[in-house]
Image (cartoon, rainbow, N blue to C red; front, side, top):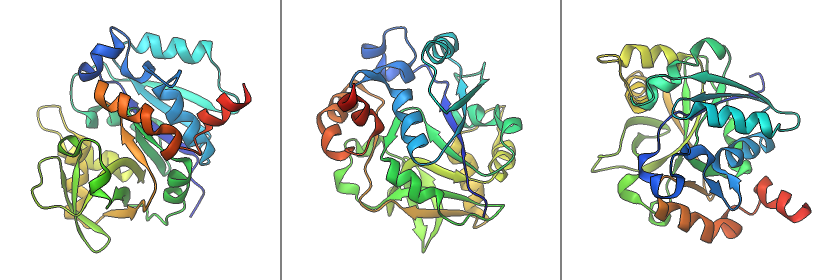
Length: 253
């Protein structure tokens, strides 16, 4: 398997639940410990081996483009795809990047932080050309907001269902996917009235036994999409994300 060095980040939503912190700014630019959330995602991915990024923007796309123009990141390639229908589900955001990603890629959310070592381990997983592998967390008791988490049901290594409202589930969706471009085909086929979520496409793959799981083990991650989640993440960041490049940068500044 060829080394994966490309990443798609979904950063188009208006982040209405975080408005108390963000004001009119896009959620990906809300500062977490002094740095925009999106910078955390990019630098952690880069530390895991990613060199090229496609960022899907939508709400306040101008502000995100301007931030990267004003803060060039060394040895990191950034390109943008714009979702003008950013009010729709996140599968629509992924689809606007389909012509830019022809090889396997890492797919991330702009509001999920993670440890570089976890992304590095996911990137090492063997991926068939028609598969997607989702990082899953079996440590359900440590999740800050379980009601908001997307749940997954498994049979062995295969994911057979994925949705937020599952009553019986085995693990949680970490928001980290190792994808072949087949994902775009399944999202297209899952569209209804021009709309689809990532989970819609994943369920299509699950029905075909093409959606596999990767146990992140003790790797930490956090969905940071409410003021409460931000406060919690800041309180545990030094403990749970000690290998974050952002911490290292603060030490050396």
